[in-house]
Every structure is written in C-alpha cells, then in structure tokens.
Image (cartoon, rainbow, N blue to C red; front, side):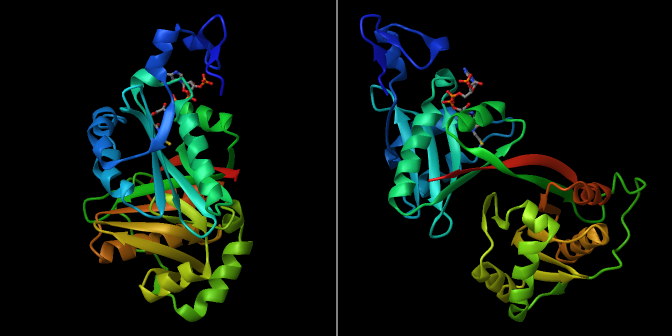
Amino acid sequence: MTPFRSGERVLVGHPRHRCTLGEAYDHAMRTRAARLDDIDAIVAFTTGTFSWGDYVPGLFASWVTDDDGMTMVAVDDDDVPIGMARAVFLTEHEVWSHAARVHPDHRGLGIAGDLADALMTWAGERGGQVMRLLIDDDNLASIRHITKKGFTRAVSVVRASRGIGPGSFNPEGNGGRRHPSPLVSRPGKVQDLALVRASWSTSEVGRSLRGLVASGWRFHRLRDVDIEQAARSGNLWEIGNSWAITESVEPTFDICLLDTGPDEAFDVIGALIDTANNRGADALTAWLADTDWLVQAARRAGCDVIGHGIWVKPL
Ligand SMILES: CC(C)(COP(=O)(O)OP(=O)(O)OC[C@H]1O[C@@H](n2cnc3c(N)ncnc32)[C@H](O)[C@@H]1OP(=O)(O)O)[C@@H](O)C(=O)NCCC(=O)NCCS
C-alpha cells in the first residue's frame, strides 16, 4: 500500500480519515507476530470489547505460544499493539480466523484488513487452502471489514441455547414445563461412521452447512476421524433416524452437529435436552443449519436463537 500521496501528504485509502503526515503516523500499520510482552497493551483495549466483556485477555498468552496458530498484532510507531487477529489450522488445509480486535481509537482505518492480509499470507505459505470465520449477523463493522477482504458469506448457521433443569421453562411450549421426548438418544458406535458420513453429505441440513461441523465456535469439514472420536468418547448419538455429535463443556452440553429431518426435529432436540438434563448440565447449546423447520423446532423446544454467518475465502 502506498500510504501517502506525494505532495499532499495525506493518508490515502481512508478518505474519512484524511490527515496530515504527523497525524497519519498515529495510525501506522506495521504488523508483526504477537509477543508475550504485548499482553498489557492487548488487555487494555480488549477487556471491554463487547457488552459481556471479551475472551481475548484470558487467552492471548496461550495463543502466542500455540504452534498451530499465528497471532498477529498491528503496532503504532512505538511498537505498541493497537490491533490484533489470529488464525489457526483446524485441519491440514482449513484455517480458522478469529479474535480480530482493533483499538476503538483506531477503527475505520483498515487495520483489521492489514492483519487479515498478514494472516492469509501466513496460512497460504503453510498449505492453507481455505480460511473461514464466524460473524454474528449484527456485527456490521466486522461484516464490512471482511467483505472488503473478499470473503463471502457461504453458510448461515444458528446458535440455539436454553437453560436445563427443573427451573427451566419452555417459553414457546405453552409456557409450561417440558415433557420428556418420546425419542431417546442412544450412543452411536464407530461402526456407524459410514452412515453418519453419508447422511451428513446428503441431508438437507448437512448440505446447507456445506458438510461443516462445529468444535466450540469454530467450524471445519466433518472428517471420518471426527465421527470416530465422537463415537469413542460417547459423543455420537443416534436419535430416531437422526444423528448428533456433542461436546460436553461442563456445565453445558453442546451440540456440534445435528443431522435431522422435519418430521422428528422437535422430538430429537427434546431427546438431547433430556440427555443434557440426565447429565446434570445447566445449559444446552446447539449449532443448527439455518433452515426454517429446524429453527422453529428449536424455538418450540425453548431455545433462544441467534443467526451467524460463516464467511469463507479460498487462499
Ligand atoms: C471489526 C473490527 C475488527 C474492524 O476493524 P477496523 O480496522 O476498524 O476495520 P475497517 O477499517 O475495515 O472498518 C470496517 C467498518 O467499520 C466501520 N467503522 C468505521 N469507523 C469506525 C469507528 N471509528 N468505530 C467503529 N466502526 C467503524 C465502518 O463501517 C467500516 O467500513 P467502511 O470502511 O467501509 O466504512 C473492529 O471494528 C473491532 O475491533 N470491533 C470490535 C471487535 C469485533 O467485533 N471483532 C470481530 C468479531 S467477529
């Protein structure tokens, strides 16, 4: 990028932020790998990122020392971080990007874009073929930033969540207590692998999610090893004609994949709520395809739902 137009000494590329050379240096956009001693500056501008806070301060140090990922910072003239972002390989060729944060005083200058460029270069040089990331549909600044970088919203996904246990009500189920589902979640077996794989690659919801499966807040294509590990760890479930893969992150019960159909979706979700209840979980979360009948079933089962987009760019 050519930062200044000769003669006028204005910062180009950011017309709303035209400024003199001296002021422009306040927004110098050098990027480099993050270091442990960046933590104070990072914590200072990320602690209040969202209304609920931020997870960055608690995880930054572990990311800097993690060999699978790269954390980049954008620094000012004094080498003090004013922005950060991270990318991590989830599989051999699939890269996940997250934790883009820019100091509130330096937003709107394309700093997150510079960090994304650096991370895409890093990932591409290491065999990354695709970069994905998740954005809450309400986060317009983030959507704008990532659109400018050439990402497209390839998948719509819904995060459903509800409380579990005796005190939890079902607001869309007559406002009363939930009855146990007529279906039961049965642990799946490693021998079910081919069935689960075939179903996820052909079912309406599996195709809608492009074959992705969640792990926490990240998504990659479902592989045989994911199904096998889920079966071995008691996290693969057969419910009627449906399949689920879960993750137990105490005290919540998280559904990472739900492969179901319109006829039984409501009872399948009910059966998983029963399982979560039996395990003493205090909340259930589920990543669901953004398909009308599935979202309605989740709502009927008492879940709040929030829409997100999974944005993708080939590297
Ligand atoms: C999302 C974020 C990383 C973007 O960083 P950035 O370096 O400001 O990105 P850009 O300069 O490309 O600006 C993106 C959009 O933010 C908006 N924006 C511009 N100035 C802004 C300001 N002062 N404050 C907030 N948003 C601003 C504009 O819509 C801009 O798009 P435009 O340039 O086409 O007008 C940054 O807003 C941020 O840290 N947000 C809080 C954390 C967050 O939401 N992270 C992403 C989680 S998925």
